[in-house]
Amino acid sequence: MSTEAFAPDRPYRLSPSVALRPEPFGALVYDFTTRKLSFLKTRLLVDVVHALEEAPDAHAALRSAEVPDGQHGQYLDALAGLASAGTIEVRGD
Image (cartoon, rainbow, N blue to C red; front, side):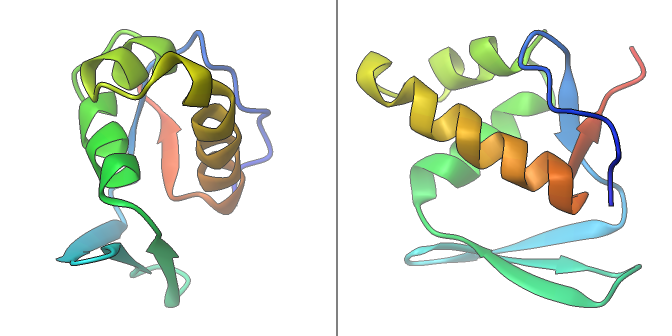
């Protein structure tokens, strides 16, 4: 679990110990280190998580995944939760 606060101006990636399995509702998330199973509840959130790999920051990932402007706050909150759980982590670019 990350002790660093989520900072949307930084670059993120899916943690190396985490695997996503696509599902009709979004994705299953499995952390091989903690053996924790969780869910990404929308396909759009899955797209955002994938976009993090190439985006210079979380804001750019939201734009890349075409998240509607009015939903950016919700998705930043979701990303903060994923960072807190260790599902995503700051990239060392």
